Image 1 (cartoon, helix red, strand yellow):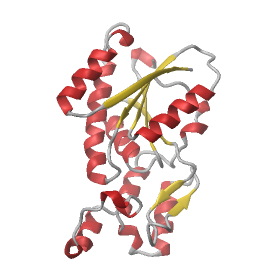
Image 2 (image 1 turned 90 degrees about the vertical axis):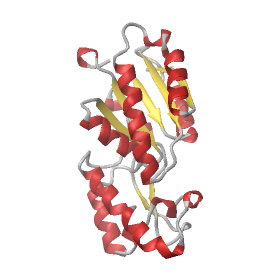
Image 3 (image 1 turned 60 degrees about the vertical axis):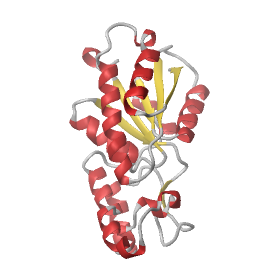
Image 4 (image 1 turned 180 degrees about the horizontal axis):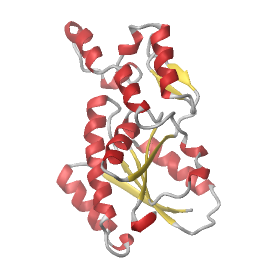
Length: 221
């Protein structure tokens, strides 16, 4: 744990753009010690079609991505995340214009610039120190974080709690997921004594209250 017994939290999604950044923003405003990451090979955002995403390297500043999208095509800058993840399309043709404006990429990128400089990749974060809890927002990301931790040589024998809570990759669900992430992290932060002794009960109670399935694993630094 960090100073004064505070937990260090990491929020992780695929591109460190939407779900992890919404949670990072909210937890940071609540005073928690939080960072965020993605696990993908590159950062991907909607492009001219679902087969032509805009692709950026991790470390590319959010402001640079914002300017690039506006330069390429102002209309593309209001595409929703659903353009990359068509599973989540749920808008009629008659309302598509206003829906794009309400759920555009530019507001998300502006939000991100107020949180930190650029998207960061989980697999490259060895220099960022240790975390007490890592929260992922989809099973595939959870698996990649666990795989990465298993590939690291444990040196400190410091335990880290890795939790997955599935959250759809759209703006509305990211907001809901961030609030749940904050509640879960706050519950962990106030645990007295050994959290490993109460983690099962805490997970079960959280699942029952919010009707959200959680998975977790314990790894070591």
